[in-house]
Each structure stands twice: as structure tokens, then as C-alpha cells.
Image: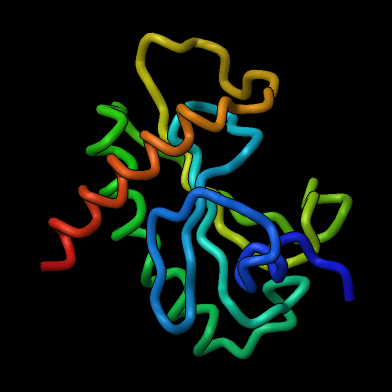
Length: 139
């Protein structure tokens, strides 16, 4: 199996982490819809959410408020979207379950702007900022 998210989790592919525990990681999306777009990923590989036991789906989604709060606080977003795609027809690009947390801003009127490659230095500094916001929430 060749999976970019499994490689990120194993440390074989670099990523900018904002959260880690025994079962989940959250990383900055390299091709964000908006600045601060973050991905919540289970460590165990499942291609689609229907492949996961329901208790693991619930545990995955229970982390969304924690990640979203950190993203919104760090980016000063006015709101956020939560997305989870399954299968190519649903625009799932990486075949490993993941949840998108996408900050939204009142002054950006384009609903779904074109995704672009994010700058590593921006991702690094934003990841640190989000991580600090999440750490404050956890304590």
C-alpha cells in the first residue's frame, strides 16, 4: 500500500503537525482552500469512513472541535467548514480517511477558491500558532 498520509504518520514524509495523540494527528493541508486549512487523520489506515468501525468514526469526529477551536483562534477566522470526502467521485484525493477543518472569513466572497501550494515557512509558523492554541484548550 502506498499512502502519503501513512508516510506522514510514519515520519517518512514531512508535514507540519498541529496535534498528535496515540490515535490521531492533525496536519496543515499543503494545498489549502484557505490559510489555516487543517487535516485531522486517524493513524490507522482506512480508505473510506465506511471502512471504519463506528466507534472509531465517533472518536475521530470528537477531535474536530478541539482542532477547529485551535484553527479559528490562530487564524482569527469568522467561521469554519468541516468536510469529509469518500471516494474519487466525492473528490477524495488521498485514499486515507481524513477530516478537513477549513477556516472561513467574511471578507472572502469566493466560496471555494482555487487551491494553491502553500509556502512551507507560512505553514510552519501557522502550525506552531495553531498548536499553541490547541495546547491552551487541552490544559
